[in-house]
Length: 209
Image (cartoon, rainbow, N blue to C red; front, side, top):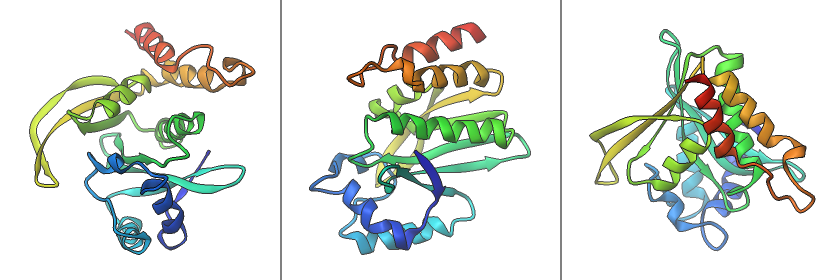
């Protein structure tokens, strides 16, 4: 898996194919603030706005061998004076969902935030109704901190927002859980996982507590 800066003009066609029928799941856009799009050109225009954003840093998620765009993620609500950063606007395309590479993408985003940039707190927020995102946050080692009621209006609907975070004192243990899960030894010859990431991150959080 490779994270690289979003290139709207080059990436739009592949990202549209990954995120819209026939290959893409239309429910992907249910809880996102944008989309779905009529065609790749309309998606390209939206990605150009994202690419130029001064408040967010957007990345294309590239699967390797062969290398191709398969999803989007971003850093947002970046407040270096407090050492806080959020990852969001995350979506995995059809060929990336439920893969080892998808988990590796989250690991890389977290590792860059803590190990390279020196942030103290990494946040994950989602619609409180989005059970898939909430399960993912817990699997990735984020701690649930509460629900902000009537926090936003998204696509003309109320959004109560569930908040999760990892702090820098928790990260070394959670990083170890990610690395143990991602190691080749954790997968059998058929590609099945020997230990689940959620088990490893839950154990890591208990060690910190």
